[in-house]
Image (cartoon, rainbow, N blue to C red):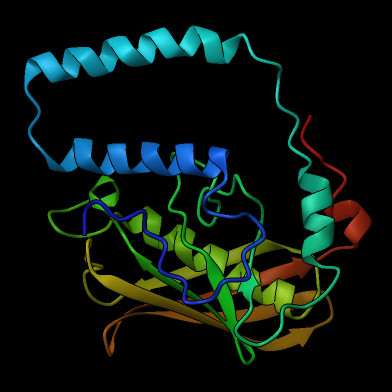
Length: 224
C-alpha cells in the first residue's frame, strides 16, 4: 500500500478533482516521499533526484507568486452544510485533507448522518516508531475530522483545546477510520468528541472544545 496516495474517501463530491494538474503533481510528490522513506536507494539515483529537483526549483521560483484565496474557500465551506455521504473539504492546500499539498496526508472526509468521517491509509513518510504512525499525525487527523463537524453545523470556529488518548498503536499502511461527533454547544463553546478505529478496534480517542466566531472574523486573515 506504499504507492497509494492515502485517499480512500468513498464519496465523490470533492471540490478539487484528483486529476487536475496541480493535484496530480502534488500526488506524485507525496508518492515519491513515501517511496523515498520506505526503500533503499542507490547513490546514483539519489544524486539524480537531487540534480533533477535542483534544476526544477529555479523555474518554479521564477513563476508568478500564487495567491491562495483561503478566505473565499472558508466562506464557501460554511455557506451550506454538506448532505449525508457528501464530502467535506477545507481547502486544497490543507496539510491534512488538501489534494494540492505535496507534503500533506490528502485524507478527504465526508458526512455520515451527523458524524464527520475520515478514512485514510497512512504511508511510510508518517511513521514514528517502527510500523506506527507519528502521534502528531494522529493529532492532526483528529483536529481535521473534528473541525469538519463545524461544516456540518455551519458554524465557523477555532480549536480551543484538543485532548487525545492514545490507546493502541496507530499502524501505517493499514486502513483507518477517524469519526467525530458534536456532543453539545454551550454559548460559543462547541464540544466535540472523536475516535480512531483500526478495523473494529478503537486505537485512540479525542475531545475538543472549539470556540465559535463570526464569519467575518474567521475569514479576516486571508493569506496574501
